[in-house]
Length: 448
Ligand code: MLT
Image (tube, rainbow, N blue to C red; front, side, top):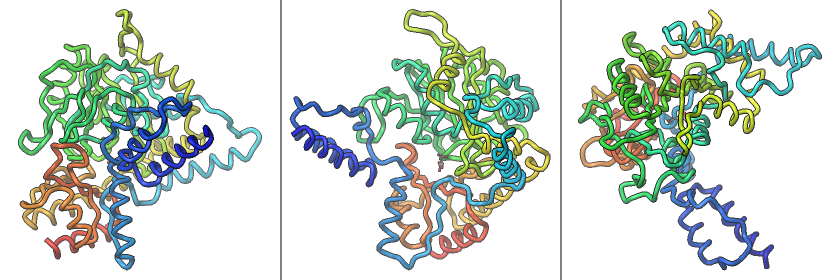
């Protein structure tokens, strides 16, 4: 009997993984039918609170369904922000050399330091931070396999009672990882979760979030912003740093798109703001600037001056907790990939990364100008690889998604997938070939 029940659960779980978490509702229902006194393993009930599939798998599911019923259709994908252009030559050469080194007794590397190799951390500290006047030492940089993972994993070292603020719309990972770890209540009809403070960013406030009305302890900020493409000025960031200092709050600053900033006055790092070393963690990535979405390399900055407190009020150093967490749960990024990432900072690497960024930003310009010519209101795309569009009257975000998919055969991302305040907007990514971007614009012009 026990074996049978376990099998049933396994089947249910497989269903859930295969078809996305829109099926969590049915998982829940099936579980209720099972005798509660059975010795079956308990699942993390927080996952059952997740309201729908993670946005991008959900889009992929709809696109797959469309493609299956229209096999002849050639879709252009401007949905997920995944890069398309080849890895920079400098990175490839460095990785090839590293592979050859690994083929020798002297050059072979086994486990590396969990925090990342010192030569990569030194290059990051010098080129990304000291060059901009930010005093971030190599020891404060933790190399990882992605900002998505780090921005979720950081919750491991933070208490469960922290009050949390996110912008709305927002990169869904911040919200979902709080749900998964039990830091929220249930979701309401609007899709918003109880227990989170949502800070709307819409055209009405110039995509600038207002400070929270209630006290919060953790604030997620992403600049250049995913999904709106908005950037924050020095003054706007200083407002958040002041708030965090006054309220003993911590800012989780996602700067994965900083390389796309074109305006010299816009800060690339939160540490360009005085006081941020005392109140902010920053996430950075090689995914978008150097095309490492598939290669995987990123880093997180935890200044040694950052403090939190234990339940008994004792002051605790966040760097030590993260170092402990990484040493226990992470074995570092491969030597080969870190060599590739370090090449981003060579003179050739810098030039090639710059060319990649310019290439995608030229795509963004094409998208912006075509859609503006069609009479659509467009935002972003000037310092970020995302163009944020107001959908035409009479249609909502998913309606516009379906319209572009079925009529123009172009895949974008519905704004409502990023939060309730994203309703009425739509995101197009500039990460694609020039030909595809131009064709997508022609197809959209022909259908709108
Ligand atoms: C996006 O499309 O928003 C990105 O792919 C998110 C990510 O980098 O995970």
